[in-house]
Length: 430
Image (cartoon, rainbow, N blue to C red; front, top):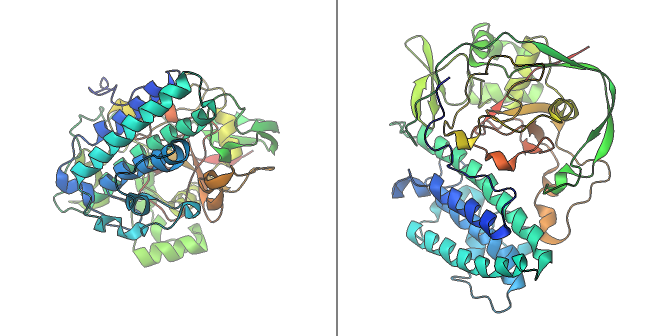
């Protein structure tokens, strides 16, 4: 594999630094990701789920303003009170908000004005965090940390959305030019067996976590086997060539209805040219590398592939059992590839690529853990109210900040969503 491209330090490690340093690193990282963008790129919204880059920049600033500056700084002066309406995402407890599907209509404030808004919020936040670091208002430290993690989530979302914007442009532009790793070949799949037993699931309380990772609890897990790497593009092409998108019995009912209505015949961002498959990446259009993990597949496609392969998707408890104790390292946004890379040669007995590259679908519904209580006040709207009709994904992906991920992290999307970097790892009953 090639050496890592320049830009390994694109997003720096933020754990362990002083709170103000972590805040500044996270905010700077968002703006660094915007450096390749032209002014015209900031306002486009081709689909309802896709938010313009300008909105991400403003919303992450609004978060600090709404949850910290306005409550903690009496007399805090907003640049424009209307920003509270424009850049609130979904917090009903904080008032009305502009419709998500129309965020691309917000042509004013301009991009320049939004960056000025960020500077204004950063100045005010620095004053507030200095008081926290000096021992005052320590009660606010958790909210600042939540805001930093929220900023990191939107760094990933912004890259997902930019990719979708560029895909809808017939020119298919590149976000950034990066030399991909050598093609290589995927090692044969090996199966790692895990015994049955009572296991602890959820965050242990050391360091930051989201409320949906709590409380830590015990679950009984039956014996299972887990593939030692994700499913590759080449393996998914075999599924396509075998008529996988046409075999009704492979699909859940809702999945078949979705595939039929949308006309899916391959993962999102794939197209067939001259008998071969090409795909859109953040570095432009290129041939599908069969050794890379397949990505941009929905839960429906992941489940259908697993049935075709005479396997299944893991539960999130199984996934966490396999990941617990492993170092959180891999192909994250800091690598600068912005795309999954082939699995390394097998080393030891641990599964490869559990972290980074692609979010891995599980068969688990996104629901509360036993004894879950959402955070109080408006923070309770962050995760808890979405615990319905969505599926859990684990592990992070190639556009996730490394410092953002841990073995207990629970991501969630609707079963038909494909614009996130969702991939597949197989499991089997023993």
